[in-house]
Image (tube, rainbow, N blue to C red; front, side, top):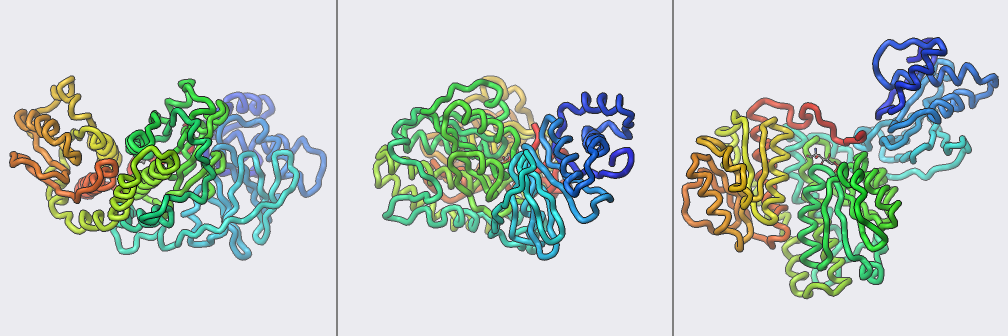
Length: 525
Ligand code: M6R
């Protein structure tokens, strides 16, 4: 609230220059009750409102606009005032804000799923666009306060997708949804015997032939999906792929130009670092392709091309079904590019398509047999540290398994490329420590086993996730998963790791869906 209680504000984001604005307002007689950056906003609105000598109906909106002109940072702002009780004014920049259109009521939120039980019709605000929301109509304005119309977007998500549907937690529900979410991701993008099609993107063979490098940029789990995508694209398309963390990429002055295709992966499509990285690569002349799960999210509107994972709303903070759908989509994209470029034998691509189509039933098989994972979780949930090991693409899965464990069980864990063990981390292996290893590539079985023997010798407790016939060895737990093409094996091998994290978290009595200190969409730097 401002000092006179005339304006109340809800704000998501960060006002970077709030200290300067606070000084300015202080010099003009305003006082502050808190240290928050948000408190400058209602007071600044009041400042401009009281300076405006006109008394017309737009005065409130003008004051909000003058305030917003002074703000630096990222924000989604909602303002109400008892002087104008019939309306809510909203504006956003680099922070998500959606407006749900109801019947004689309208709603605002930062995320579509929050409003699905009220409506499926949404207005998605652009940066620096204003909406004045009344109960039965909405007016839209650009940054110069010129009024315009805006199309409504119908979102197909089912409201029941935002309920637990008999599961104890959203995370468990989303893990079990994976056979179906993957079917949705595949959709009509390919049929056996026919080339892949992406109606939603207009990437020509001519353009693709000019590309000499691909970047996949993302954060967290989405970045881990990118690592699997790198293997797929390099192998099938013979184009070098760099995978980068968005928060590093954006400050590193990466070497990119019009011959670079930059792929941005984001479940929410609202991750601040990923959006900033995308804008940077556009400014350097690269074409950008967004992979997102949320229709109309910021990243999809910024990118040159956009494809959706269609995994359905993901509510739990820990990403599960979004990850597997991202990997599936990257696999289909790699096949699509390879078909266009003629870079891989069609028989190999056809076999890979068959393997992709078989994924849902193979995931079902893993999900139907979780007892050993539950027993393992009971044994290890009190541990303080754990290690994940893998080689090749199994290393990528290790990274994702380790992130999941940290996030929801608060157990410190590290993932290592198994061959790196002897270069340092083995010093940490001691009696009773838990080491989880993934082995899905027949070419790397022997090497991986010898790494595991090294930790067993030092007293480690081991769990192996594998689709190989391993020689008899003294492993404590072996989780067998179905065989598939090694390029897409992370989609299967990650499932037991998701479940292990889940069961450990439950054993510890933690809030699985809302782990401490984390947000579902990281919309600030
Ligand atoms: O919405 P995004 O895919 O851009 O989110 C990226 C990361 O913040 C996200 O994957 C995070 O690491 C998850 N909580 C992991 O489970």
